[in-house]
Length: 108
Length: 119
Image 1: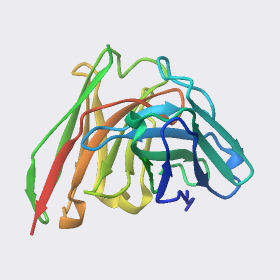
Image 2: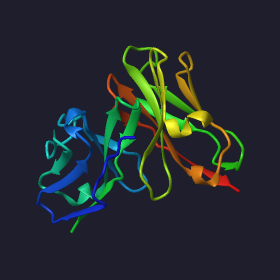
Image 3: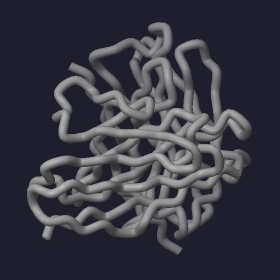
Image 4: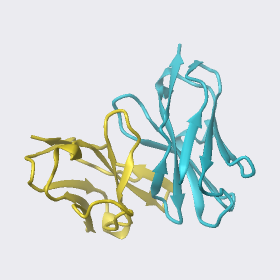
């Protein structure tokens, strides 16, 4: 089965740029989606189809995908961005939705 | 406004069958390219996809749970129902339903419902 690998944690100071990686075999050939989940809340879609943002999502959130790594980039990090972030793909080979293990973003 | 809301028991016993209902509003389950997935999250752990149903009745399952899962939809009632048989304490989790439109990404989620399985 297809596996997505994320770092357990990323730390960044306010105002700086956070980059969260999501690794997978030839992930560049798939569409990657990203979710933000704050404690006790449901996930929220922040990026879909590698780099598109849902309506209303700040342009501080952006995504890229190439080769074996997809990346969620959060520019000008704010304290309110502190959350868990999950990447997700649809694996056509297995007809499965696959989530990464999640990355906890800490704003120092 | 699109909303999804999960309902079902908070506590089930091991070996019992769990039945959860996702009630949706703001969109039709029969509209082209609409779909709903069930996704769960054990306490402190990552998201795990369970099953998905599309507007055209195409269904997909997590293969590791396939033998225990069923998913169905009642379009007039705007509900999607998930059943998971032979519950185990390892199935303790918050269960979410989430909407997808066209592709397999989820733009709207329910608040989730915590299901605890007692041994």
